[in-house]
Amino acid sequence: MPTKPLNELKPKEKGRIVKVSGGGGIHRRLLDMGLVSGSEVEMERVAPLGDPVEVRIKGYHLSLRKEEAIKIEVEVK
Image (cartoon, rainbow, N blue to C red):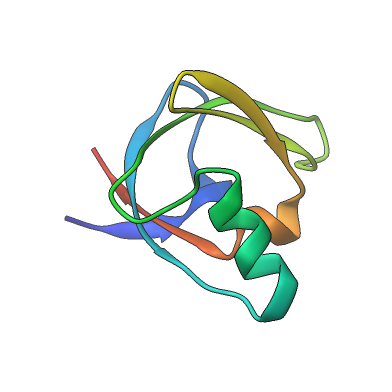
């Protein structure tokens, strides 16, 4: 299946996290928020200028900055 960064998902589009990249603290912070490989994620909303994005993961809503969402590779369903 094709993969793309999380920030490129359209609203209501779903996917499965394949890879979380990034260095140092940002990587650890993303993992602590539940953004781990294999998790299902759904794009809820994108702000008018593309920053931030709101996703639904593991039953809760999470807002991410664009530079954080780019680091999450998603397999589109």
